[in-house]
Length: 165
Image 1 (cartoon, rainbow, N blue to C red):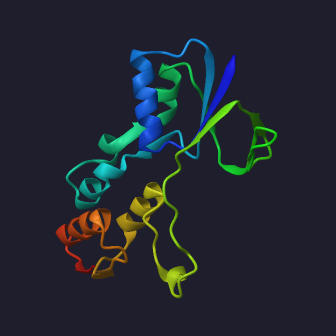
Image 2 (image 1 turned 90 degrees about the vertical axis):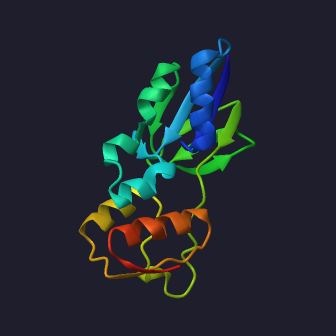
């Protein structure tokens, strides 16, 4: 039986899990590794920040979604891949064997830019949202003028902050 390892619960892997509800894989064992059992859906994050949605309305229960298609959910973080041995090592030291692998962890923020140590990263979304709940939002500068940056800017402006994008 093939062992398929999905690393991360990004959009592509969530779509795969949803598709497997309709058409299950009979000849494969599937495992999903993600840092959290539930996560805020990124497309709804600006609406949560602005107060249009409650956080629980925007959360995806990743563990339940995996379980619904008989995939093993493993809460953790892959820190090393050994393609020659077909092994993934987790931060806790556990090793997972695989035959096929897919990585969908999303983008990581660039932390080497001067001044980055003073910035609040949008990822992970849960930590960002938790910090925003207690932050004074008088004046905010957002680095990143793409669609996500613009949506976050509008959400923060909706909450009363002066925003520079």
